[in-house]
Length: 266
Image 1 (cartoon, rainbow, N blue to C red):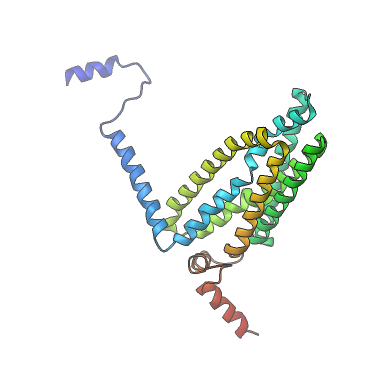
Image 2: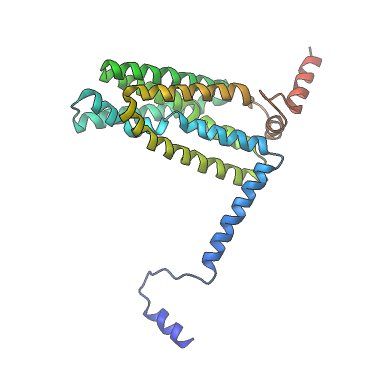
């Protein structure tokens, strides 16, 4: 004991001291978290969990982060010579467009609804990616920049913010923490994989690689149209019941009850 006290006295200031069992407690916490996630994935909120995870993948499958990260590279390849100042200005324009888009999305999500914003956002991303392909292959630097800004605007006012609104409404309080943690981890994992693949596709396909992500945007819009019910103006319990008891378009028990009430009022 005296030796331990002497070692602690001679320990440099600010050096981290590991407590007994600290490492094992960390692993126990991770195991409990994984067990909680598994319980949600296999429990009564499994449909909501699947919906949140697939939406997370579609969120990143449109290459939203890759477009921002590799925008200067694409513009430099197209123009052949792009000064550092010009590249930074172009990147600032794209970033500003993202801020504006997120603001528009947050102001309109309760007015226009979740489904319309996500579907129109997916359509906008698909069209602008196809247009960006034409601009890239046509050698138009300003055209490519305009398409990138429009793409970022369409994504930011829809998927960038509305996704988190939908996920926050899908789960009960007991399932929300593990479910959102898993969906968030999957979102960042998908984003990292897309960033890795994006550069390879650019080297292989050139501007035509953007058509791949245009198709992914179409798939994301179709998935929302088929499987995501509208949650605007509904209580959280109603939303959760609709999602977990529905097959397509939210026609679950709560949805049928609401339709019956509306018909009886006519």
